[in-house]
Amino acid sequence: RSGTAPALKWKLRIGFVLIPLAHSAGMNIITVLAFRFLTDNLAISAGAAGVIFALVKIYDGVLDPAIGAWSDRARTRYGRRLPFLLAGGLLMPLGIAMVFNTPDFGSVIAAQIFLTVALMLHASAYTALTIPGMAMLVEATDDYHERTELMAYRVFGNSIGMLFGSTVPAYLLSIWGATREGHSAMSLVIAAIVLSAGIGAVLLLRDAPRTEPDPDKKE
Image (tube, rainbow, N blue to C red; front, side, top):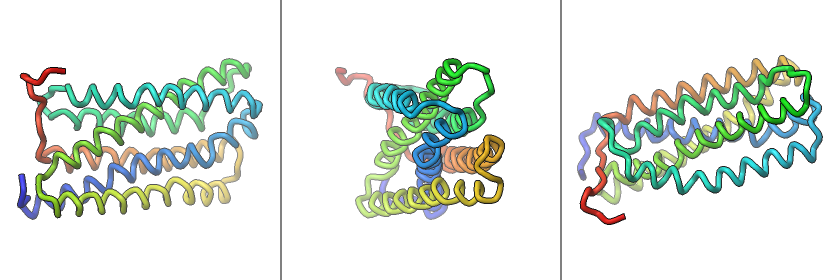
């Protein structure tokens, strides 16, 4: 798989920029704003919000190796990794929208349960984008220099995603206000960016070189 054709090489480069752009933007908006949104806008206590985030972290710690093993063993017409990227690209914007558009249940407990589910969905999407995405990059070429180049594009995409996920939301809130309505509108903009990047990556990487699981390998 060394000496990738120029047209495919550019698809891989852009695709491996878009994957980390999507997951980094989607993660940073939660990291930077979600805790404050829960306490200031939804009237959830800091202690309860901390418990929610702790539960999600524990869930994420269990999920990461499970997704890695699942994507290693998966057999689909689109290869092992691409379906996970598609799932992550669709579910992460949904998770973002759910967190910052939490309905007014009239019950703090109901809101806490809803947010826990939304953040778990978001964490699942992040894992689906990152772990299979990194494995797909490694499998895309046997050439050391091409692989190093693709890794550089990945780092570049991650930096762009961090910029989108940390500065753009704050800028939008400065315009629309840090109200529930302002957070709602802001989250939909970031969700649209994440969705576009995720779907774009899937379309660009659908012809990427891939490896298949060895049916004779003992697990």
